[in-house]
Amino acid sequence: MTDTPDSPEHHRHIRSYVLRQGRMSPAQTRSIEEGMPRWGIPYAAQAIDCAAVFGRHAPVVLEIGFGMGFTTAEIAAARPDTDFIGIEVHGPGVGSMFKLIAEQGLNNVRVIQHDAVEVLRDMIPAASLAGIHVYFPDPWPKKRHLKRRLIQPPLVAQLASKLAPGGYLHCATDIEDYGQQMLDVLSAEPLLENTADGFAPRPDYRPLTKFEARGLRLGHGVWDVIFRRVA
Image (cartoon, rainbow, N blue to C red):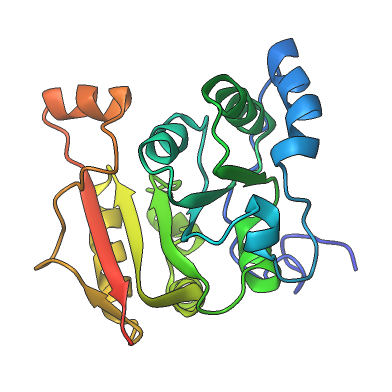
């Protein structure tokens, strides 16, 4: 079936990304060619064995949409006892992440270049994750596009099911309206409980990006929402 905007195939799920591939630099292309065999996890419709992938038993945190990878790398460097799986579809970001892994010797990071919704469905075992990070997803600010936002009840239910009891789901956005939606959707999920009274303060493990710091200086806000999987 052709995947047209009106076809059932097109509407089977909300994708975790908008395909804006951008221009790949020679360094990013080389990083992907060299990094994918070492630190990439190919998409496959079967569950990941994280102990085999990382060569150890450790808590695993999943990040959806790591952008250029700077935040992911900083968090992973600060938490060497935790393993991180980052999902990103855009080539420049994947290349940048592999470059950071190589430069910083980050043995606790792996990358999947694929749609996060399908990765969650097919590759992440139930109750297996210590945490999930969703930082600054596409806000889709226009009213007619709100249904395209990633944080919606069906996906949050799936995310919650992948968390081990006590595992956390941490979302962050610089769009207040989206922050409120995140808070509302996560509050309605019965497998989750809020760790704060409403929005949460930015935890120490999430570094302040240059873009975020500039926005805060200009009076712009950032909203963190952190929920925990109940037993």
